[in-house]
Length: 521
Image 1: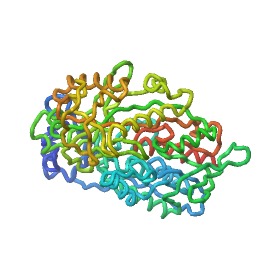
Image 2: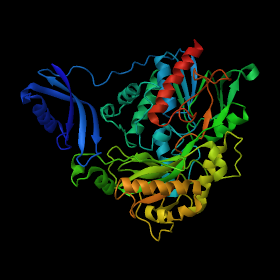
Image 3: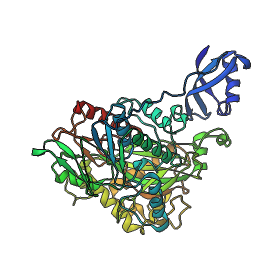
Image 4: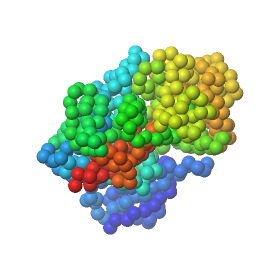
């Protein structure tokens, strides 16, 4: 007999299979010999009250052993003789588009401007070691996209767009821990995700697809009359022919400029900008879990804050418990920061983006010299903020300030130790970051400090600037995901302005692949 049971347990009761069985015996009246196996289906931590609970949905096998697989694998056929489809970009949108194309019988040709995920790691290390940014191989560009070396968080609210469960199954099939199918906020970890990405590439090649690294799309190829895309021309001189799924990511600014100059319809899109805020993880654990021994049974504590200030949202973004702040610039004269966590979430720091919502119509009040008539106006605002950080820092040494000093409007005389390896430099962020952002951040911090006592503290460090929260541009497309004017072009994922994070980009990649299949048939 198989039973599915909902449980609400103390952390120590849910800590391991033995303690879980004891709790099940208490809740159900079953005896130890009755329970042959227990499979956790869903798990979440409820820390809203003083007493922390773990909510579980479990499948209990009574007098029988499990026979079914933990997840149903996807079948990938040989498509070496199938019609070619060009996938520009090997981030989550591009990789999942390629895998879905194989499912549907089409042959993906993936071109990626950066290096493979292992080679790329060396260039990322050089940013911290030598403070040198390779504009084609960095935290944004390369196999796996911006998510490969910035955490691998898989939580999304985009459940109406497609099957989140299918995306998680595909990750598991390629080497991710099955725990991502269980946890409320699933997370692979930046130390584990590269191997998963390599396995996805191996599957594409096994099925007859192609993957080309250090191959940048320089222009689209059109059929006569410029009414249909025929393929792409690359920096290597190669041309690839077929419908084009454009999954270049939110930092491919040269692509946005090329599309605008080519009269392909774009529009400015709202983003959020601010800083990375770093606390000691032990402090966040104390605030969230309310008990000194919680980490014996629970993972590093997370938080989520949101407030309104001056008609705009102020909120935490991409929270990385037990993580690190990383240098995410993708070109010269930029300082950009992001966050990541290893799978263990075991560092001594917690960080998150603390950002202010920004609409295209806000641009003139921040930088009056940027023309709002251009769909690239929010992109230009991003660039200006990143340049200001670079001017107030030193190479990749980032400008920083203690949280309470920022709120009080004073320079930090010293800075706490930080996980940001290129280094931090004391700077009056309250003085040179535009008031549109600083005034709202200050009000948000004061509210968050009242909500969670101890959060607004001298121990917390702000590191500037967090600007790459999402795409500043949307590439317009119709209801069938194809461009409303140019046939054969399928803008995809976060870079096209239709996703936000690994899972939503992956879902959008699958949907674009399905639209290409309909287009070709």
